[in-house]
Length: 117
Image (cartoon, rainbow, N blue to C red):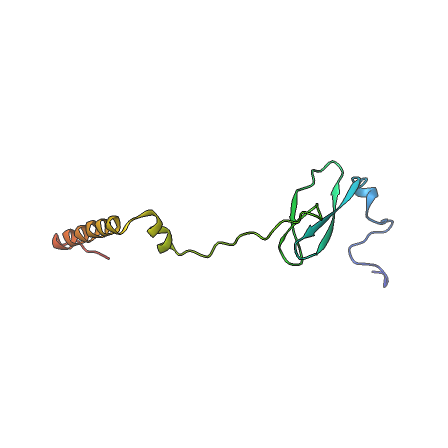
């Protein structure tokens, strides 16, 4: 192998780019503004629909195309446990009834000699 050859190249190969992939789509530049005064300039194809909002890559806040009406921060709901969701669906009396039914069922199985794991 020649000393100056690049591994994976072939003799007569040209630059990779538009000749192999075709012409690039015409583009438009769109600037998004977030509430923390960050600006992000993105490229979109002219035929593509530009989204109304975009997440700022610096702070993660929502950004919009309108610099005068920047979107506000998203409301973050606190983490809920499984028990919190159960308490939303069931009242205390319903939970007590379900617990009593489950305990009675287990006691009946144990009384009949069935092995409970």
